[in-house]
Length: 322
Ligand SMILES: Cc1ncc(C[n+]2csc(CCOP(=O)(O)OP(=O)(O)O)c2C)c(N)n1
Ligand SMILES: [Mg+2]
Picture: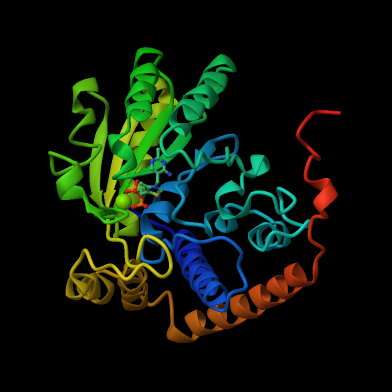
């Protein structure tokens, strides 16, 4: 596939935005400034960016719990984002939801269920709305390898297939569900791609660290869906760099393997090497972006920290429509 310089630089900017945001989250969390907990998706940026680079206006998307910074590349306001993460009234859910509940309807973000996999049905519902309106939009339903073993996911795939609805079921296979390796929880090599084959859906399994390979597979599948081809499956193979949660010491896996993934399969370093070899990106460009992004985020975090918290007597607000 031929790409314009603008497209490649846009993909790079999104990758770097996620990486910088995930790092900023890790640092802020380590300083004890984030209430609750976070699941870092650092190292898995390429699959999210490659897939969501095919998104058009009117499409819906539903992420996993792991890439907390994702709304940020989809156009969410930084004050609403950091306000929510730091449990402030300026947050997009008034600070009530935190990391897992940063739904943002104006960017098509449907929100997510902390009961993993149950939101597959919500994605089918959104696809029904698209179908009802005769639009060529699609729904991106992200899940992890562990989640891909859940029953609601297979019920949703079945409904999407029989009603020919445009849902892209995406498995972000990072090798683990908490401490359980995918080789234990799943009897075939491709967690979703291998098991969903009975539905005869268009299916692609790709290297999730190769952003352009992911983009090309997602483009092929979503083009087919927009033309009325019904649901499809995309599995991206990657590796979870951090523990399941911050503080997880990962005694259940070999640290040398993690190190190898981080050193040899860093999706951003791999993409940057390609762009630099083609002469469209320099180290100075990267450093300038990182520096200005960091300052922008520090200012947003400072504003969120200075923002008011919800008062105890406001706890019942929004429970009922007024
Ligand atoms: C239905 C359900 N079961 C268990 C949990 C607890 N839980 C939270 S994250 C997680 C691991 C999910 O693994 P995976 O789907 O592979 O996603 P990853 O964390 O690797 O991104 C589990 C079991 C949950 N939130 N929902
Ligand atoms: Mg996983």
